[in-house]
Image (cartoon, rainbow, N blue to C red):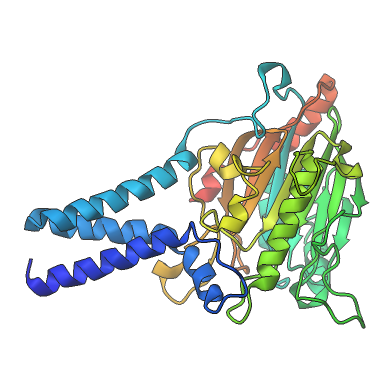
Length: 385
């Protein structure tokens, strides 16, 4: 390698190392430059690729020190990615053998409709193939909901909580079985915009409901859409993810010094799920605080051995810029994750995310068969292609 090539590779490696290190910086959201740090953290996986390129260039050129530094950074990224590729379905809250879930299977799906622009016929085909039992529709407008209803996309999901609303704040929960919307005991807005009332901060709807699953106990579901990390101010994003963390801890009964370990009334359900566009990746400390081992929730894609599952952006000017980051997630507590994945849909800039979970509880054979019809008979694995 020439001196200029060594200098260039060194600069790339230093930048990649700095980007990697940023994932451990829980930056003060009010600090100057915080929006740039938060946005850079979403790109941390790319630093591993950059280190791999430097390693491939340095090794054959005999640049030993540069190759060693690049190999070390590649090893760091391999260690970060390894938990996501570990095989198998694992309980979401580390129960003992006697607590292993034995109840019905439920398929969960979350979809950002991109201000209601998602192709209604394509959505109907996707939902007909996947047959989810609980769906969270984010950025749903009244016109978008009308198109989905007209296409028959939601005909097997007659029970609803939340709403469609203008301006991208609408979030709707739709379920196969009866559900009861609950008032969330936190400051994450259940209703993001109230007509005539200036909002304290920009926010979307984040409805919560208890789904009464046949053959199992109640399933507490929160459809979540924290505000995105805007370039001008990330404080609403950070505040709403912190509020979601507090709700998860309360709802799962996790004892914490600042919460006192008190469960909310809705937490009588034995399993808790958060699904939606969380506008955060696992390289953001704010999201990692929700996840095991620091928090009570398990990331479904990781529990199913799917690794990183990018969901955004689907629409980009260059193919290399598509599908860079995983913003959409299914988080689970108290249930076993069986499978998880993503699925494309025309008309939206996000991929849908789905997960199959096994709930606690016994239940009779009829109930189990009913759930299995919607959750297990049609293998959706091919949708990830």
